[in-house]
Image (cartoon, rainbow, N blue to C red; front, side, top):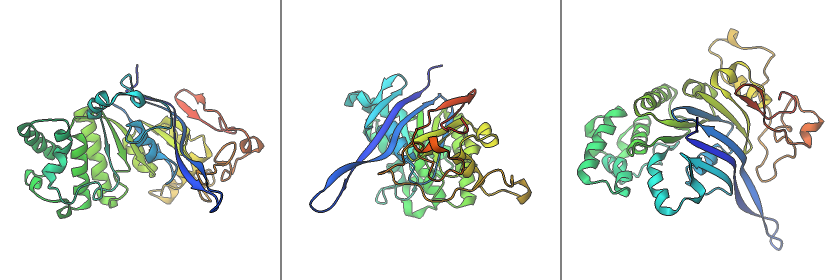
Length: 323
């Protein structure tokens, strides 16, 4: 089956000025460094990792909010980096993003109906059609029709995120990047928003890239999970498989950091919490980028980058020791 989105060797480097006053030069910040991903129509691919590992940058590159430095991105067979402006504009109806900050993503000077309808204005939809679609979308995200005449500051964080979801889905996209959509919300509200996204996926036939740093949230919504570290994918597997049998030490550390519902449910001594800070993307370590924090590192890890292997069907890992 042909995937809805296929990324091959996707790279995004940002030029950064470095050096002294008389010897300034430019070095690349390797935010995303050679990522391969496929996302099937109708599935949710979770993308997890610590802050600063390149998750959000990758999400924006995949829908061409920012240009890739290198690599190929195919969306429904179309090569996104090489689309002409007219065809790209038409394709943008098919791809949307839900941002992390539900307040910062909404224009405080616009009423809710104008915020939600703005993508339709850009696409040239008539006023009457926009009004009807806004009313329908408000109902889908669980907001009353009267909310359309109010401003973002009049709503709670969870309600503002519902507005952001309505805005993203008003064009009836096929693919949605959910960029940490619940991380800024209270725990009690997070479950409501995640459940709403699950319901909308089924109702509208959506495909998600769900970005988060909380593995417990990602497990609930995702079919498969990709683990990202310092610009690279280090493990990819089905949601249940990844949690039951993680192969990469980084994945094991992330799972160990998830609070257990009961202390007896903790696998004592089998998974070690992650220590140390993520290295700088300006000067990533040679070899395996995780070797500076890995309890299992061997000599090869320090000099040779591990290839992505498939030790079990559908389970991919980049590790010299566990691959």
